[in-house]
Length: 177
Length: 137
Image (cartoon, chains in turn orange, green):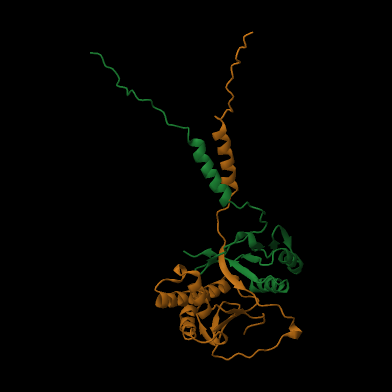
C-alpha cells in the first residue's frame, strides 16, 4: 500500500494588518502622553514646631538677609527699600563673601510676606534669590574647575553645593508694615 | 509622427515591508516616555513665570496641589478645604516617604492662602515642595 504524503498547507498569520494595529496603539500613546516636564522653584520647608515650643534663636545680622514684601509688592532688604530686580545684585556679593566660611556662618535668606502679598511677586523674589545663588555657583565652578556648574561631575557638584548652600528660610506669617 | 510616452522600466513602489518595524519603534518610544494623565484639573489657574527654575527629576514622587484663581484648592483628584490637606498629605507621606509636593498656584493668589497650605504641609511633614512655574522667555 502506498502512502500518499499529505501535502502540508502553508500556515500563515496574516500580517498585513499589523501595521494598522501598531498605528492604532501609537496613536493612543501619542494622545495620552504628557511630555511637559515639571519645572519650578524647589524649596524645603522648615519642620513644624508648635507655637508654644518655638524658641527665638538669635542670629547675627551679618548672616541674615531679611527680605520683607508688603501687600503692595514693595521689597525691603535689611530695612532698605529696593526693587525686585535689584535683589540679585545685592545678594551676590554677600553670598560670595561667605564661600569660605564654615557651614554655620553661611548666608541665610529669610523671606517674609504679608497675607495680602501677591503670589506672583513672591515668586519673582524667590526667583531672584535663586538666581543669585545659581550665578555664584556657576562663577565659583568656573574659577575652581573651569566648567559651569551643570557640567561638573557629582563629586564636584557636591563640593560646590556644600560651599554655597542655598538656605532660604520662610518666616512665619505676620503683618508687615 | 507618433509620440510615445517614455516610461521607466523600473517598478514604482515604495517598499512598505519595514513600515511595521518603524511604527513599532515609535510606539515603543512613546510607551516608555509616557506618564498617563491621571487626574482632571477642576480649577482654573495661570502659573507665574521665573528664570532660575529646576526640573523635578522623578515624576513618580510628585503629588500635586492646585490653587485656582477663585481660591479653590485641589489635592490630587478632589477639591479640598485647607484643613483637609494635612491628613491627606500625611497618608501620602507614609506611603511615599520622599514625596515632592508640586504647588501649582494661580499667579494672582494671595500669599495668605499659600502660607496656610504651607503650614498644613509642614504639619504633615511633607516638606519638599516645588512652586511650579513656567520659564520666562
